[in-house]
Image (cartoon, rainbow, N blue to C red; front, side, top):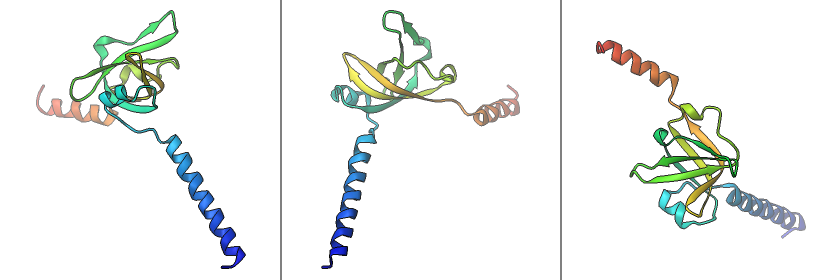
Length: 133
């Protein structure tokens, strides 16, 4: 085998190894609430429906915001974040929290929200109008 081929193969192998290493570190898996609790301290993502009736509260002692989300099975998880809440949090229907479960609460390093689409709202409005409601 020629030296150029060997050098090329080594470079390709190094690039593939680096891609695998970095993608593994940056890919945070989505897990269920139960799996998040079992993965104590490990970075994961959970998704749930925002429980608006529970509200989001600022904890003065820590400066953290806390709120609750529920999964499709009705399980509830308390979420805490030090970063503050996204600007569209009040309109959110679902929340994705990235972080780790610690001491009975999911400590989120990042919060993403899913809000109802303005198109869905218009479709709902048109449907109810059509039904004479």
